[in-house]
Amino acid sequence: MVSSYWQSTTAYRPRLSRNALDKRTLIPAKGGTLQTELVSTARANGLLVYPLEPTLDALLSEVGKAHPVIVLVNRGYAWHPLWHYAPVTGYDKEKQAVLMHFSDRPHEAMSLSTFRALWKRSGNWGVVLLPPDRLPASASPKRFLRAAYDLEKTGMREEAVTAYQSALKRWPKDTAVYFALANAYYHSGKYKEAEHSYRKLLSIDPEDTMALNNLADLLCRTGRAREALKVIDKAETEDAGMQTILKSTRQEISKGCAPLPK
Image (cartoon, rainbow, N blue to C red):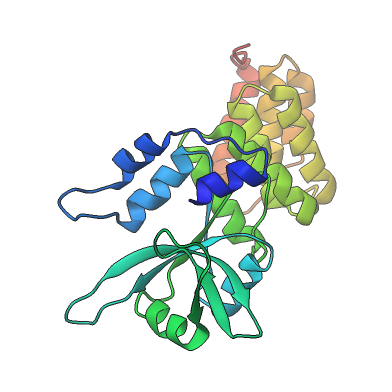
């Protein structure tokens, strides 16, 4: 439902068919889907999975921006649980009710008090599934970066790059985002873009040791060993592990780095 919603309202195009989604998520022995399968399938479908802060305020901030939130609720009892995933699609402030898709009925209203009780049984578990070019309304830089990196780890590197770029529009001075973007470009073979991102990071924090190390490595592997040495010489740290990395990079530069694949 969420995938179809984004397909109809944005430029997002799903990676998986409805049939493929069903096959990846349904566990016959359990007659349903676990959170792990739901999350991994969403990423395989090209969506960024952002774990919602377990608060009503976070949920309402998302639906207020027309971001559906998938929640897990128990409509049964402790002795006979009836777990169910449902997209929360809106909030009626006047009636104090949330709007949900429990079955085939869209925007089914449930009183806020009832929803609170049902949602609490799952520990207020919820996720926001978004196209990579959109940011959750309740996003924090660190939490969003983790979500984007998890997308990258599944092989969705192009989508992850889009997510990092989107993050920089909201947090233009966040060096961790620049670092993740630079690394994603590097591993995608986009070396000019990677260099630009490392340099942008260093314009914000000239003493970022890992960025200096990675930029030096990139320069050396693109035939600029002399410039690489100047960059690595700026890196100073008291961290023993980082010192080992810097030493290894210097040695490689002095010996001549293996060129990057074109």
